[in-house]
Length: 205
Image (cartoon, rainbow, N blue to C red):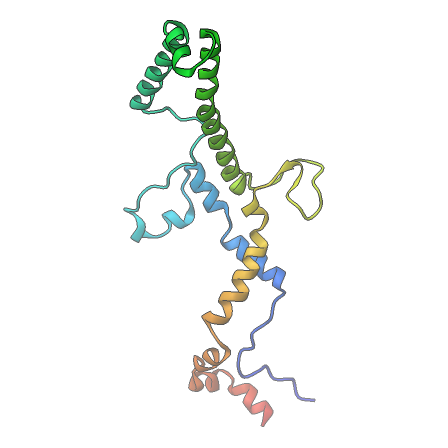
């Protein structure tokens, strides 16, 4: 019985979607994003000479930064003005705010001033934390993790946790548009194929 000849044209092997996604995640993971957020260089940033003069990646902003001098001066002036109004000029403040005493006027002023201060501090903190938890940590940190989730007594970044689903969607959306079976067949050189498969042709004959 003659040996079975190999196919004349290369046949694309349909891999499992999970395997394709795993390979895609291994090739292009969220590590470069996290490395860029940490300030370390990534392979994509240093692998191409065309980007040698590219702007260096910025580090992920810390929760607290040293404020500019103008902001510090403004805060000091505002604090001094509030302190003077609550102590030296409390009687005049009571007249302006229509309060029965200077102590009540000072208390009302402190309440009014605390509204924007507390609002800005709370908003800045929780937005920074939300952005940080979107990308970090890359791996789950904690214990008692709920299966198939990124939560438990700990946390894993949303982007690292969804890396495989993102890769699945990227494969499903990009691969069909990158190359088609007709284009694969069109790239086969007929003369070269005949020379390479001459032995198989003889066996079939």
